[in-house]
Length: 143
Length: 408
Image 1 (cartoon, each protein chain N blue to C red):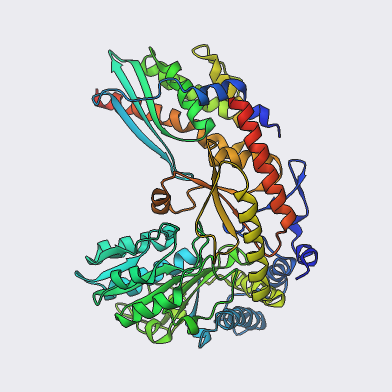
Image 2 (tube, rainbow over the protein chains, first blue to last red; image 1 turned 90 degrees about the vertical axis):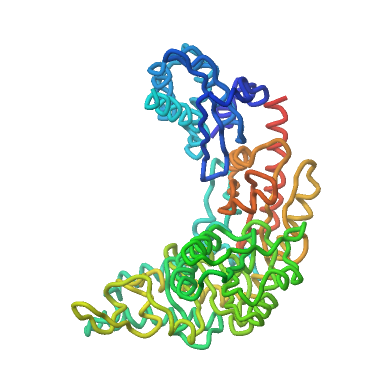
């Protein structure tokens, strides 16, 4: 077990300098999710227009893996249609299962492939992505 | 206590994890099992198993003797007045739910109070929340002192003549402090309330005498005291248990069954519906034999030494915050490392072969009281050594170094 497989430089960079950390207007789609096994929580906000995510921000508490994953996800999801956003989340699930998937939207995400070797940490990595799925589904039903 | 001899009893300890000898510091979550417990469960299944309390055949008698023998061991271990005051349950959670669902829901009404503390494990908190909601009783909290202890003046101020139940943990699974449970019991009784003690974290580590405490109910889990998972017990005073209704109905717990009415067996059987946890009880009995052979006072002393040593050593690390009182604690240390999430601490330690717990420890209200979202926790048992604490300290220094380097 190599720690460097998990804690890659790009992950640590997102952890130290998270992108899109903050809040959007109250009208934005807001999803609050907990990881009940450890107490971590994320509040994800999505600004949607004409079937597209135009902005995304997150706040909350978590470990290096969950915060860096949220940071990367918010970068990747901007400008995506709902379908593309769900597709991203599905590809991320594949990454967690060890599948060879690519993220042309944000290659940083591929650095999280090492989480697959640390099963106890997969829930940390997927928290933000589960919030994304929930938010898109919520908005889809609303429209 | 010869620690090397004690460690020899635990097969699981003698292995490498990620290339390092295992250092198991998560016994407050679940303890490891000595060979004698593992063998007792196997032997029971290989030689004595049958259903209990019904077959006339020989195996039926052997299984019944084994199961009832385990009940007697638990009763003696807690110094209960009689074996029928011991009800076997799935664990502490089930035991506390039984008291809340059967006793509290029938006794409490609007205007009554149920008193607990913010340091309770979810298992000694949610059952009372639910009982209060169902009955209209008010749920009240004894406030905590800044160091996480309970002051008897606060107990006096919170418990009133309207209080029907006081439920407090003997030892906090996060703060590690030993609560003045005998004194709290006496205040509860003076106000006419029954006293329920969560013994999940006390029973494995110190001598418990329920008659001396004079508590009305006491709950424990087998798997935290060298026994198997899936077995625990509720102690209840006979006079109270005898007047309580069962909450599970079915086989094993009935006296007569008619088409529209049924009657119940005496205690403890009326609370043990269905085929009981026979092998689990046998394993718990073997665990008690093992602990008594080592000696509960010996175990208590050993853990106190480890706790003091760990407290001192962890205090010397820059950026480490320890939660809970310094004095009068059991062998567990809950802490955080500045700027490093407990998950990350735990993953780096795991790479060194060291198992600790990271999370909210089933104590979300207490986490909010501590103003943290989660913590790390190292917990010790009779098989841990000072060298293992040294490895923990080295591991924490390495964690700081790794994260200091990684995030620059």
